[in-house]
Length: 161
Image (cartoon, rainbow, N blue to C red; front, top):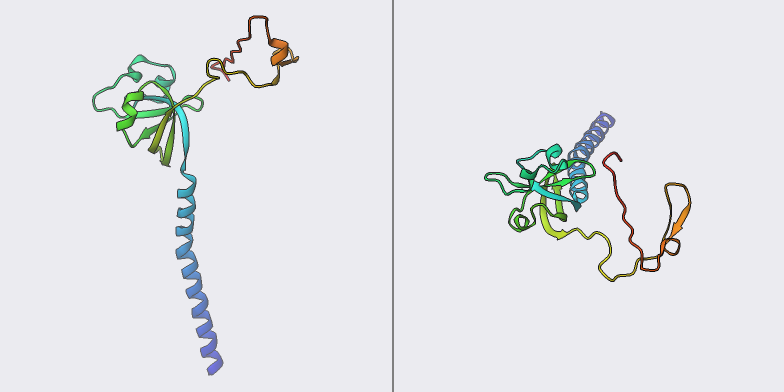
């Protein structure tokens, strides 16, 4: 009869270990998910009274402070809108291109900081050396494009990319 008791005790221990393993696994996964939700998102600050298509089409009302509406961030490359949890410091940036740092939960970003998006070089700053193929497949560099009065490069992203 003793071997039967030992087998029963071993089975109970095994079952208890399985229960503990499966009850703590969701906690570990939740901890991992929270760690991956911190980051930064760039886009335009718009009124939540607009949808993503209206904001992408730059409907003027999307850039006005509207009663009862919150401020949102639209990523104009993916047409995804995020609600912003901290509204106070955001109001001054309505319509601006910004980078928001914070934590994402669903489609809501709890903001930690908001900074104006930096595009291009500062006035007077020299362009770094580069090489890129033009629309005809020829390699262009800063030196091949440089004119006697300087060079202006404009990269235009069309709406159909």
